[in-house]
Image: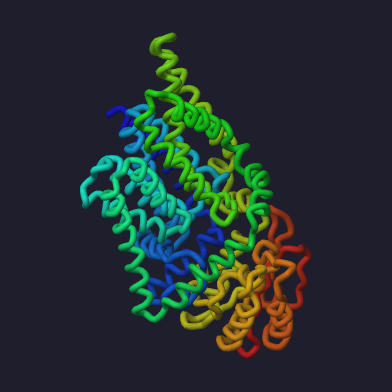
Length: 519
């Protein structure tokens, strides 16, 4: 009971911090999920109405969040708080099964702390958070059932692994874990039912899109284009950026990672942890593999590794307390607990400004640098106030959060510019399609985002869209808004008469243009 009470206190503490951050502006991934989630609620399908290489599970999740918690950033983040709290409980239950009560508390506290860390972009409602929950529930079911588990438990676990996969492709490692762990246990029957369960949601989505006539688009974006995207970066190129990625993460959590590393050593060499090692070793290795897919080492991808790191931390606390207690008595247990508290306190202290002091816009700037996420709120509000529900707008840039804030449909299916400017074989055709979309839609407003991270133009990519937009803007558009990002703490916003003829003073700016023949 005391262990459960401790976990409840951990969840309350983490939840209180997340509640303080409810109003942080959405990043572009969150904006994408929210925009397409709203399209789903309106009866429009992803890939037919908005292009993305991500599987549709995350859009269904966001549609649920918008329905249950409200169509605001705060509602999305509130839903995230509920999901991460549930995942913390799952880590505790798994640790309880494998290691005992207090190591399980240590694992839960580590999970709650690291998944909150801005080093992993943990304050954002990323797809990884929502993939982790069904994956962990599936693992709990498998561990409880054992190699000779019931058909129902195996099918349900597999179904949950399939759901996790549909939320985030990288979550395929949950299924890989089941294959490895059940394969090592020679539990062929259980594995067969897990695989069968995994196929159920995957096939259901395929049938859903096929019946709606949108399967070709689903296949192209999530398989053909996704494969081309994954092949852009070679393993050598990907590994070359690892030091840079680690530089963004390790200074804020190296104490917790080191403690997990100690746990990894004990997991392999300590005979007293041998039974747990049959689960933990495959889980840790397959979790690590999930971060290597495509060799795009995004910070949020490492959220998928945190459950394993948390359980390894539980092993470290368990092993330290067992070795210190015979020598020091009860104080030995407290020493092991103090090591955990110091490791987790380091992460919290390193992020103290973001977690406890800064306001919403300042948090977005501290975490995401010069990306125009705070500015997108004002642009979206301006568009919403000056357009009717059926009118289209276009964002020339990769800022789908503007569509969400405006609550208006995009005048193109390309809500990201990234695919158009990658060194991949479909780029030229995509640029042509975007041009046709915009010219056919005749959007009332067009937003141009002059921020490099909103484009990521490859030197080898065609530049037809950029040349076309200069001509299109001069022929059809007039400037009615300028958002000039002068410094990290100062953005000047001009609308209507103040914006006409005004040129930006900064290299980072957003221009809002209205079609000349619009009233």
